[in-house]
Structures are given as C-alpha cells and as structure tokens.
Length: 220
Image (cartoon, rainbow, N blue to C red; front, side):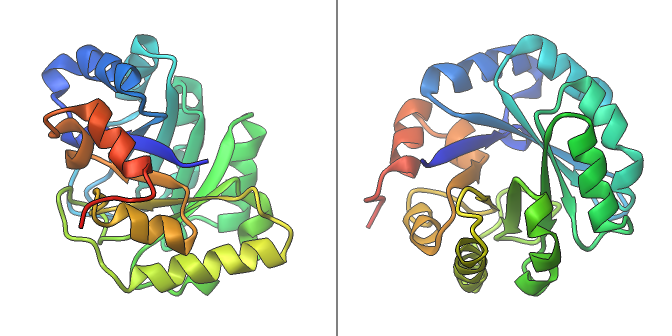
C-alpha cells in the first residue's frame, strides 16, 4: 500500500491546525516532521514542544525525521511529545543499534535514514530492528530540491535485500523532490511511503495531488 507523508516544512505554520485538517481531508496518510539542529544540517527547525502542539491538533500518524548530530539524546523527548515513528541518520554520531532499540522501547516505530551519498549497505546490519528505512532522494536540510535519479538504485537494492531477508513488510520512505513525475519511479523501485512538501501543500488541489502521487500513472 502506497502512503503519503506531508512535510510540514512546506505548510503555512501560522495556520498549522488548518493545514493539518487539510491533510486529513485530502487523504494524506502521515505528517512528516523534520527536526534540524543547525549542526548535522545548516538549517534549524523545530523541537519536541512544537511536536507536542501538532499532536494536540491531530490524531494523524506523526513521522519524525531527526536530522541532528546526537539523535539518541532526543528520543525520549519526541516520543513523549507524541511521535508515532522516529527516524534518525546512519551518518549521525549515535550508535545505530542502541538508538533503534531505544526508539522501540518507547513503544513507537523505529527507522533509520541514509543520505544520497552514503552506501545503502550501511543500513543492512540494522534492518531487523527497523520498521522503516528512509532513503533521502535529495541532500537533507532544505525543501524544494530536485530529485537525485541515482538514488533509485539504492531503493531497488534495499527492497531486494529486505525481501531476501524475509522483511517484506519493511516500509521504504523517500524524501526529496517527490512529485507526480518522480513518484512512479520511486514506487517502481520499491518505495511505498512518499514524503512530499511543496507537492502537496502548494498544489492547487491537495486531494488531487495526493491521488496523483499514489497513482501508478503520474505525469508525462
């Protein structure tokens, strides 16, 4: 089943309750909450107190993406604030196995993310501890970037390895440059969770954009 995750980076933060309601009405499945610390990536976004406000405003699935140097120190805060899933980067300073176990001990889903330039094989030792792997299809830190086509091979390799290990239920999420043109490519490669920011929030009709992302056809 294809799921969409709307990135709040592209929403109208002055009307976040309205934007969340718009996502639900449009048929979006998840809300993608990007956390940036100004160190792992240049930008700084929002922390767990903001997530707590988002949680109070919606019962939608909250997909929290930690782009921070020390994700292990943040797990408790974001879990308590209402995250349903937390993913962190293999390139961070935290121990991957211990961090994944910490996330699961909070009773929520665990995931690991990988940058475009990092070999996908780096996450293979941890797949059994993951509910999802996030394959970044742009460099993390900025919204609105163009999709990197070379990431398609990483998605294919990951899906093949997961299937060979009996992990067919592993979600593969993609984030960056996902729109009606690139969505069919990542889905064919094996991704089933599509993060979209501008592609959803800036669309003339969010519901139609959501349908298009999930469609097997897409744009020519």
